[in-house]
Image (cartoon, rainbow, N blue to C red):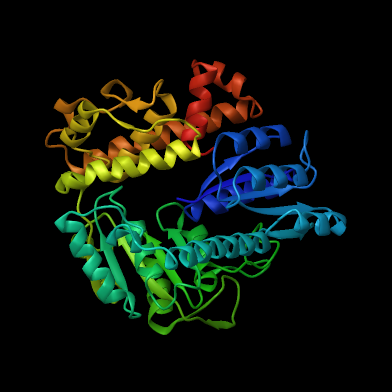
Amino acid sequence: MKNILVAEDDRSLRDGLVQSMSRSGYKVQVAQSGKDALEKIEKQVFDLVIAGQRMGGSDGLEILRKARSTNAGTLVIVTGENGSGAVEAMKSGAFDYLQKPLSLEAIEMKVQRAMEHQRLVVRMASMTEPLADPSDRYGLVGSSNAMREIFKVIDKVAASNATVLIQGETGTGKERVAEAIHRNSPRHDAAFVRMNCASLPDNLLESELFGHEKGAFTGADQMRIGRFEMANDGTLFLDEVGNMSANTQAKVLRAIQNQEFERLGGSRTIKVDVRIVAATNINLEAAIKEGRFREDLYYRLNVVTVAVPALRERVEDIQPLAEYFLKRFARELRRRVTGFSAEAVRRLQEYRWPGNVRELENTIERAVLMCEGDTLRPADLTLLDREHTVGMTPALAVDLLNLEALEKTALLEALKRSNWIQKEAAKILGISSRVMNYKVHKHGI
């Protein structure tokens, strides 16, 4: 997941960016001041930084220079009231400079372009180096028989424009499989656009998917393009596709079949060339029988099916995944943690992982952050009681994952009440400042 830092002095623009980028599947963190931005950049690695030129305590150019000197791979977009700082920003290595006032749509497009630029750079670099492992080509970790079968399917479908339906439990890595299909397809140089269909109410979901014209509804003070347009010539990933309403399903079916649609409040038909990759953690055939999902849309999506197995069904992949996450978080969090004890590896492999790869990722991130030495031991691993995980159903796993969402909601509410002062928010929640800082980082707030 791409890590973005928003250090924007315009609060309305900042809040809009956080909501939009989060819905697009990015991990978004907010800096409350220039000093806060510099401290966050010092402690972890960001893929992209959006810096307002007049951040309190430090200007956007200082943030730009810090980000670029700390990690040359970090892209920085600077925003300013006038063009006076544009030349200096570009000389200092900014990816772009945007002059205010600017629309949320404009900066979203710049972010999309920045992410695609970064993917292209990584792709070009990988072409000049020998692959250490066949799975490197797919951006997926694993050498189990189940993963080898997925690699074969990716090879077969990537070159075509066929619609793909990815099925699997929550947290198994369905989005990573979708990215692998796009990365190995002829569309790899175009955009890969994400849309979580379960994250928004019906009316807002349609606006996100198809865009809207100015005045289409209350608050629509400017025209905005949707995800179908953003993904033109590329791939649109529809996550949790089974959660769409009947009305939205009908509009999505038409857009997929005819490659055309109208923005909300508009009459002009917009043509696109978009490949669709969809994902779901529910049984769509059962949803059809219950009248909750359109049969014609199901057959349109289910041209090729990829079944992603639960982590407990590919135990041999647990250790390489854990090692991958350890290296990543040790680099991002700037911690000198180098490996696992033998007992820690055994604990990881015995655990059933009801939350799958996502739970493993969160567990290793937390362990790397809190570890006192250079080796992760069983005491560093916060796992559910094994007695309660044996035989755990996927539905219960989802309920447990929802605790993460509840925790994030509580953190956000406390921060709002305390005017975003972490120390005061910690008092409201009855936790220490250190725990508060950890949880804010964990949820990308």
